[in-house]
Image (tube, rainbow, N blue to C red; front, side):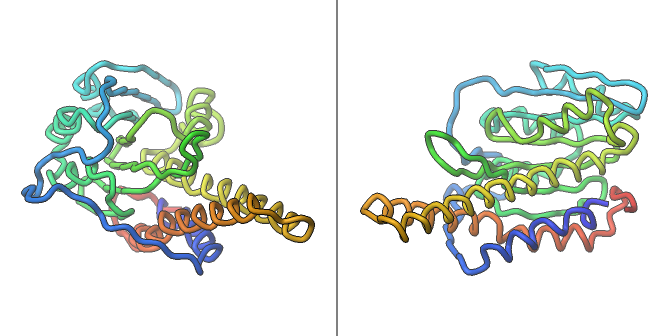
Length: 266
């Protein structure tokens, strides 16, 4: 279900910015042995936030917990459980979740390495997905947030760098039992999370297109130094979009070709 449903998004986006390219070398701690859990992102001091949504067609429960151990009973239930972790700087939270679910240490390492490229790995009992969530910040402009998803038989774990995401509509549909999301499994929830991230790329691309139209009008009317400055800023923004979007092609192909037992038909 996941691969077949989401394939349309990244390919269309890639074609929209196919002439643009930009690369930055991935940064990893020098000398760190494989599997050692080291957070490579911005060092933060606030407490990691952990939210749990547990549901099936007939019931729904949502809560915020103070320790990852509080989620473990839900993960063992037959209902669908979505655990979202905001914050990667408390390494022991990631380690504890991995130990309970028997997640490979190299997967946990990739969750903590925020420069990891988008990818999909089938580990048999779970699928591991890395994707970039693009958001526009009023202060810092366009930025990419490292998001990791782990899909199990009846659960999804999502790991984000900071609070705030594009999943508000999904949470609302779960709360209100809208559509078929509450009647389907964890694979459908995972697909919806991925699809929502990709859909937001189009929002940002449309925003960039509107900026281009405005700049074209200025160039025809009365261009000045500020126009040139904004052209350069838009060029850098499109290059940044290109850098984040392009690696999705291979990840989506892997999902489409996956024969994982965790993916339903459709």
